[in-house]
Image (cartoon, rainbow, N blue to C red; front, side):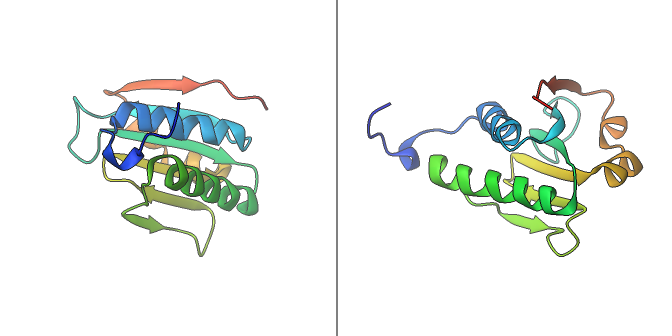
Length: 127
């Protein structure tokens, strides 16, 4: 791709969501879902949701996403929540919000159920 300056590129939120999902796959996250909110909510364009196998894994996935998106796109999350408990870490990139859960917390909050009217796409991962 050459030496293009990512700060001069227009970053599409759909492409960013897909890129984030790919990094979660690389870090062995499971149950990866991309929810397109553009037609049903103004909270963000996309949610990317994933499950980690343990609190340490949840943190490792969050660190991977944050490090790779900073390196590739020059983007830092506008807001981060949940790192102290590591059961649900939220990385808010404004147009794309990343939710990384442990299994029990994800089942309890059921974000996909809250946005069942949105387009929901499941990402295949190697488990």
